[in-house]
Image (cartoon, rainbow, N blue to C red; front, side, top):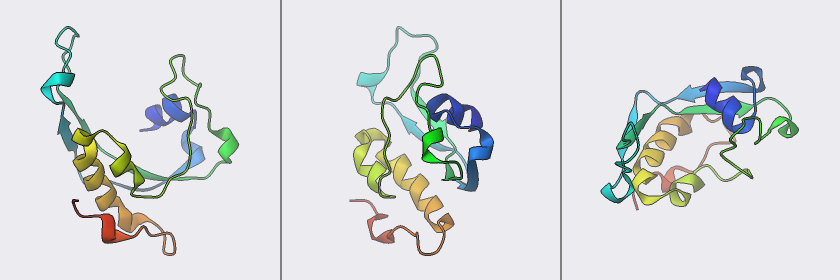
Length: 120
């Protein structure tokens, strides 16, 4: 998690506080049309453990080009459940599961509404 945090947004471990993590691996499979059989190894999906982090550092510490091959060119704060509707459809269930497991780790007064937690 710390490696990804630095690679993707340029933050060091002391820049965040871990509030929670999913209870186990969350998995999704790629639809056949997205599987690149010409690559080695062939990726058929992914398993992930998600972490809920609180940014402790100033926002100015976020650096999207900390890695030689940046994955992002912009960032913004969004509402808690927004990523479920913004991600490609075959990942939506994993996002819903992860956010559902982590929502109770938000501090009181910052809790996300649970009414959007269920499937649409």
